[in-house]
Image 1: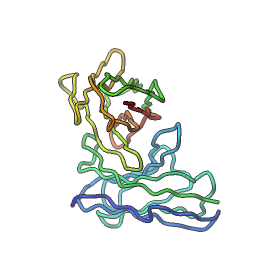
Image 2: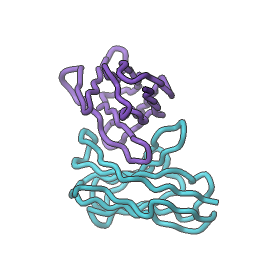
Image 3: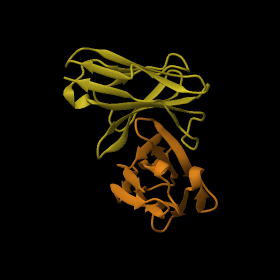
Image 4: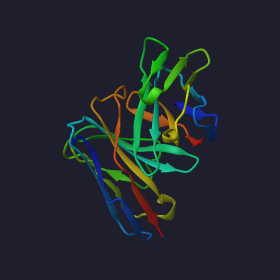
Length: 114
Length: 111
């Protein structure tokens, strides 16, 4: 089944404790992206990747890191999480490099930073 | 940079009634336009998109949207809603590699 998977789905952590949220797609898509969803703000793009080893900042990259060493994986790293990073996070992938194609979204990761 | 404004944060509607969700965008360059839907506790899925050509775009589940370049709008419509259409709807615009979403419109369909 074609899908985007994220792990973990739920995470409660404390300020400053490094964490990684994994994202994997099995559709051989070029483009992958991370978003955070907050009430009243919709989804905001954190980082995106056009291909392996090619990443760039979205609208809200502060406090986050990403890497794209393999085509299928695009982990999101929070080196020192803070309470303002409490949010619902979505990973997405798309076949092409520019966003004319449909993006396929993962199920989301709900992160709480205490 | 592009931006998206969804003019209604909440839209209550009765079953079998029509619904319209309004979306305006701003951009200094040509954009691609999308509507996504998020059902409760799920990820987003594409309803429809406008890339070029006919300004009336038909999507899944009976939804359609009309692109109006002069008014920089991309409003979403459905002539008759069902209880299962209860969800949050997001308008989005893309330029190049970046995608910007509106704040979302919550549609609640009542019997």
